[in-house]
Image 1 (cartoon, rainbow, N blue to C red):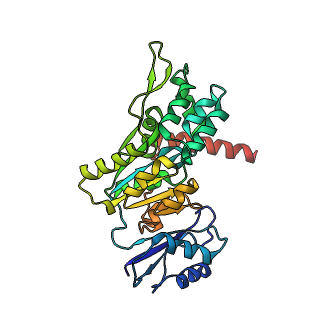
Image 2 (cartoon, rainbow, N blue to C red):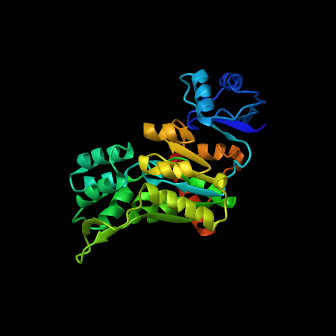
Image 3 (cartoon, rainbow, N blue to C red):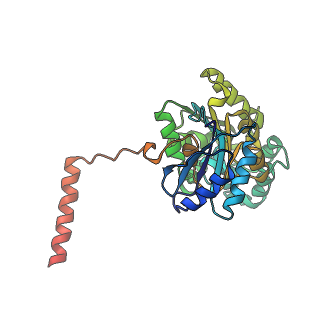
Length: 326
């Protein structure tokens, strides 16, 4: 079989059934038998079309037959699914927030900044001038504010760490490439486990506070694409060995240059242009798209309890149990 359609849903709410799989099989040209990657969550359907494949069109046809079911569909060539280079956007992709919006909240200007951010992510205005305008509103903030925002406001997207750690374990190189700021990417990249991170630098004044300026040149749409091409060359990889994910207009060039560019819960124009889109599943969908089975995912090692700690813990449990018997 030359191609594969991967169906995946949110693993928190398994909803992929045999009936839905059969509907998808019937919509594909010359399909083979389906294979579960994770029962109820993800499955592969191989197929062998006679004509050149429009992956987006076939994925749309499968979505049409499964109707309102919250199932994502990724169609791609079967050969070369396991990628060796992974690039990811940060804001609203690897994390659930837009960092600059949360920083603006500290100045009382969040709503104004949110509106600019949304327009930039939809591609209605150029990213670089929009970033300069928003950064100007952060003037006077102390860098410690960023650490507080990360601690209190920023959440990792479900499945992201599993995705990165699984690919790293299997030899892929991973990079967090953001149009945001190094103050955030350096922390987030370490939390998730990326090999490296690239982003924009906020400039500081002599008093140690933000100047309201960002270092030039700004890492925007073309900068993200250039990062992918550079890393691909550094690692001696063909285009088809690369995977990229993002949600905004400034991610499009990177997504288009990747072997598989995935729009994750993205703006409509990005979802329409990317090779594939994820709307319902979490980021482990990108592992299923590479043919991983659930049991192949990286598993966090269980922490080893020091014997002395265990004795103290067990003793406290025994005392509590004794009290309940009195």
